[in-house]
Length: 622
Image: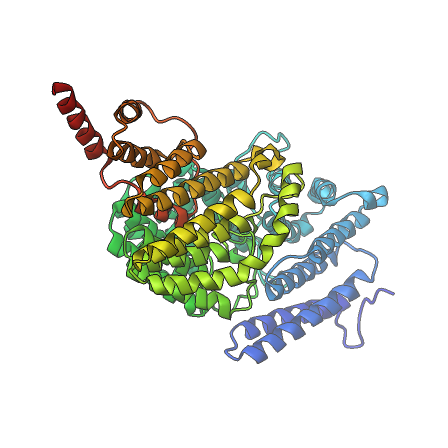
């Protein structure tokens, strides 16, 4: 039964309004409380109070005089609930839908519309809103929450249709959603209106900032740099919270770096570091900038600071009891320049860059720290390469062993390789049926044989460094035996080899076989057994014709064996390849294999060809 008055003469509407205002003030008091537990309790009590008040209002027949208050309470309840949960849920969508249905009930237009979704309800409600001017402010506030919910859910088409309807346009011609947001003009709040946690204009400002940021970041990821700059500048010049401003400045730095403006990029990154404590993204972007500039020292210093920054818990301010910009932003995309990953991922970037830039001692220490960090954590010990970004654990072991060998720590490399073998060798008996599944196209190509074979290859190189040629040849032979025995030659018939991942695996397999044959061949050369070396080099050429280093080793061996005609024919072929264009697809190889191949290549290919040409001319003169 609808109550008109109380014994004190106050209407129920006035009492409900007083309760709403009191709960809004309580939420604002909670926001300013420095005590976390008291703050949370006050806010939770306010939320429950609003829930009860809304339940009371919606338990009565919908009435136009009460609806402005009811919709205001609905908005306050949604705002407080979403801010406490730090996100929107389906419950908030249902609250909005119930509010719209209540409006239509007053116009006796609901009926079959119970079957309709939110888009149709909004269209209908905004059409009849001209008949209910007293509801306009509350409806625009509710529309702001609907827009926030759809933006957070990435329902941009629905968002655009809502904005067009709010702006009085049904053409659907405008695809510029940012312009639609700017065009939206919520009515001013009346001075005697019930208190709200956030008015429609405040919601519009948040939506503008969040949408421009999302749009700018997406344009940056897809490479539309001019449009990215425009959107990001708009965010930076608006009402942007400091944590978001850090990300905006970082994205602007990335944009200018890609556009070839390193100085401006650096200015934005410095500004990002000054704005807040979330130093990870700007430090990672700074390392990319210094790498592009060729300043290796500054690049590695940035990465070291990044590792330290990710080790320090980020202090974040308590969220406002409002719909904030951060609430409407998507989680970091791995493709985004703002995604700096975990501490272990940053440590790997640092270690790998030290290895690639020739700082082997530093690389070795960083890799050992990284392995200790990962093995002491609760993360899975092993995972397939495609299950997450970056290399898997066995590949980290192999990269670490390469760094140790390059740093002259062969004995430590042997120890590390033995540890890796103890973890992977037990998987080898299962490889036969894994390869059968790969051949049929039902499973991915197994990587374990490559890891185990590569481990024996690195052990062989460690024994070379320790001056034990017999042990080295034994390990190289073991590597080849695994590669030729455990990995069938007809695997390429499987469906997996028809995709890019399969091609990369094939390339790694061929190069690994070539590396083992070259390494063993070089040991035969060192012991004066050129005939055996010739067999290995010829087999390497046959298996991996794309590895040009093999041809140079073969040329030198043919020359030592005085097989002049074959050497001359090979020299002419190499000369033609040097002058002609390089053909064929180039697949990226694992870092450990790239580093290893750089060790066994001839020191100066051009000088070798010129020397052979000189000797050839001298023999012709004779």
